[in-house]
Amino acid sequence: MERQVEALRWGTVELIGEDDLRRKLRRSVTTGVPLRVKLGVDPTAHDLHVGFTVPLTKLRIFQDLGHLPVLIIGDATAMVGDPTGKNKARPQLTREMVDDYARSYLEQAALVLDLERCELRRNSEWLHALGFTGLIELVAKATVAQMLVRDDFAKRYAEGTAIYLHELVYPLMQGHDSVVVRADVELGGQDQLFNLLIGRQLQREAGQEEQVCMMGPLLVGLDGKKKMSKSAGNYVGISEPAGEMFGKIMSIPDEAMLDWFVLAARMPKAEAEALIAAGGHPRELKDQLARLVVARFHDGRAAEEASATFRRVISNKETPEEMPELRLAATELAEGGISAIRLVVLAGYAASNGEARRLVQQGGVRLDGEPVTDPTAALTLAGGEVLKVGKRNFARILLD
RNA sequence: GGGGAGAUGCCGGAGUGGUCAAACGGGGCGGACUGUAAAUCCGUUGGCUUUGCCUACGAAGGUUCGAAUCCUUCUCUCCCCA
Image 1 (spheres, rainbow, N blue to C red):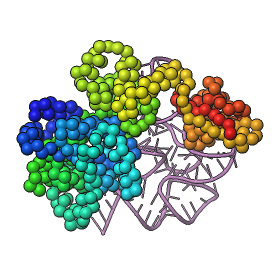
Image 2: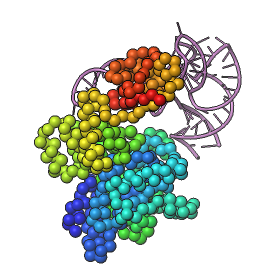
Image 3: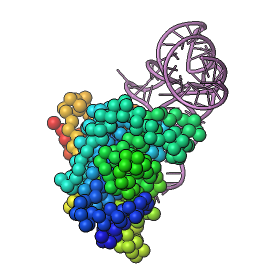
Image 4: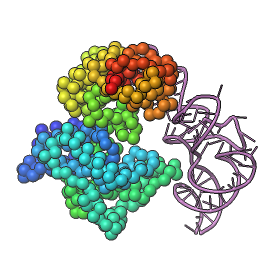
């Protein structure tokens, strides 16, 4: 049991109900009944990001200790939107989007968790079945003052920005999930404290044993300051191509490396600290970090390749070995050539002609290494040329 | 129910009849620099067949030679009173 407590230290910054946890673990050891460990994800985008792998990894640790992960796909809660940390209401998603995201989330979660040994649930199963009466009973369990304790709500209230009633219901929905699945433990990020505590409250009122709340650290995003989130756009998706992932990790500030080694690469803290304390060039350390993370979500080979490509393309400004192909139809070249604008647009590196024009004018477009200066001049191509747009967008031109 | 304030580009936020595709900041993009896709600096940031045209300042109408700016109605948000 002490071994379990020790293993569970990873990725926990705050623990509500430590005594409960010990008691539950002890009982589990004697009775052989695994603990039900709940983690909820709201499918609100295609990518699951690396920050989310922290609680997911923690769930994996529980799983490896013989406990039962209860992974809840928050398809009902996603449609409401978790207001945590938000200063404005989140746009509501459609049923179709949520279903689509839910599917891709599961695929991605499988990279960390063994889904065969999990209980997978969708909270629409019970939340949508609640009905109006059920909803009223649920919301009657908490007060407005209680909800306003949460500082994001309090802040918005003070600032005079809109708080919709359904946002106030969100924590109750999440708490109700805990009641339904009879969670022994619920995992979440540090910012989820309030929501997880509501789970305890509702369980208590339902006559259940209260769940232990384990809050994990929030992995900082690429900017090294804010927590990684989709809305902040500072995230690394766990199913991103290896090269993208590698490059993004290379760009995190040096100070964020320790956190990343521990939380994203799952290196034991002492080891990571020693590694960083040993000095070493930050570039090399980060290269190692990036390789570890890429290897975790792809494989070792992809990690080595990503590292080599990065060195080549970014550090040495050379041309990568592999790049997308841009097939040009003969008609594009019919009038003696093709403009750089058209080329960039066809390659998909500019959303409009105006943007392409700007890129050329700003010196961001090269053909076989030579800067293209005139956006409209007709370029004659023989095929096989390499188009470069910006620092790292390439395309090999092929003629039909 | 009554009274007041407000809705501007990806976001925040100026602008109260022409010189506004709209200050400024953030974000994005490009360039320089760098171990880095960081920091910093410079530039750029609605679309198009680009010395011009089109679309845009919550929505729809109207006044005017001309409207983000004035009027009417509508929609939404916030505050105060009940």
